[in-house]
Amino acid sequence: MKLIDYNNVEIRQVEQIVLRDVNFTVNSGEMVYLLGRVGCGKSSLMKTFYGEVPIYSGEAHFLDYDLSHLKRKQVPYLRRRIGIVFQDFQLLIDRSVEENLFFVLKATGWKDKRVMRDHIQEVLSQVGMAEKAYKMPHQLSGGEQQRVVIARALLNSPGIILADEPTGNLDMETGNDIMQLLSAIQQAGTAVIMSTHNLEWVARYPGRHFRFSDGTIKVEE
Image (cartoon, rainbow, N blue to C red; front, top):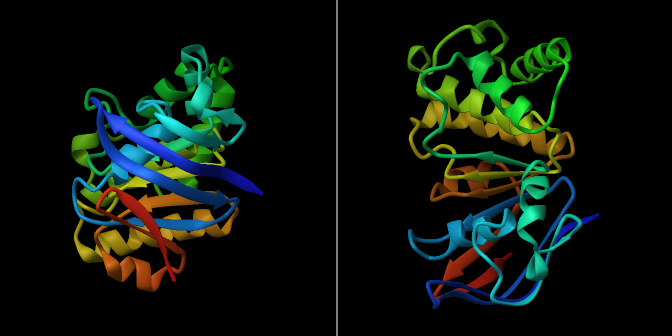
C-alpha cells in the first residue's frame, strides 16, 4: 500500500527553492533513508509530511491527505497519524516518563485514564522502558530518553514513523540499540523514514535510499 506519493513537487521556504522535481514514494512497512549533507532539504521534506512546510507546486499525497490543498483544520488530525522521533528528544523536563506520554494521549483525544495508563505501559514495554515510567528525563541516559521518544511516537499506532537523525546525539553502541528498535518496528509493519549521516546504519539495516544533492532527490540503488 502506498503511503506517500509525491510527483514533480517543488518545496520552498521564504520564496527560496529548497527542493525541485521531487518524485518520492513510500509503501507500508518500508525502511527509507534520507541521505545528504546538512542543509540539503531532508528536514524540509519531512516537514511537508506534517504540514509545517507547504507544498509549493506539484502533486503530494500523504496517507489520505492531499498536501497540495491541505487545510489548517486538517493538520492536527494528520499529525495524530504520524510518529515523530527527534534528535534532541524534546521531552517535557518537568514531568516523569509516564506523565510525558499521558500528556500526548490527552492532547490527542484520549479520555479514559485507566485505558491511557495501560496503553502507556504497553508502549513502554515495547521499547524496553516499562520499569522507568516513574523517572524524570534528567534521570535517564541519552539512549533511554530516545526509547521514551520512540514510545511517544508509537502511542497512536501510526502508519509512519519519521526519525530525524535519531542517533545523532548517541554513541555507536547506544545508536545501534535504537536502530535495532526502529528496525523491529519497521518489520512489524510500520514504515520508518529516517534522515541520517551514518552510512553504517544504512549498510546494517536494509532499506531504500534517497540521496539529496543540489536541490534534487535521487533514488540510490
